[in-house]
Image (cartoon, rainbow, N blue to C red):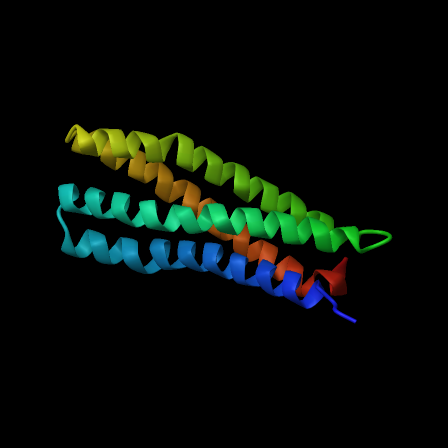
Length: 152
């Protein structure tokens, strides 16, 4: 008999790796390298090109994480506390991403297209802060996912 649970769990985990791993790479490796090597106009333009590609993957990851996670939760007669925590943290992360996408990212694109570098840097600073928060929440969520059933 076919069991879709391993597929759903694999999709769920891979989607989380793409999103959280992408944030870790961008925040901890790419950002410092860009600051070291590029001037603000090139730096901001590179970020727009990077976000344009990465955010497509984040949208896909959100759909897959939410749909696979809710489906897997539906299999439990009583949902464990750690799963409620994971869902809550995941929704917070998704809301932060929506804010990033529709507010500072939009401002960043507009500022760069008009060559308003200071405004672009301000918008990028907001994105950096929110990505740092989301990265922290994502790492905490990963700990809850792996160890939560032992503590909660």
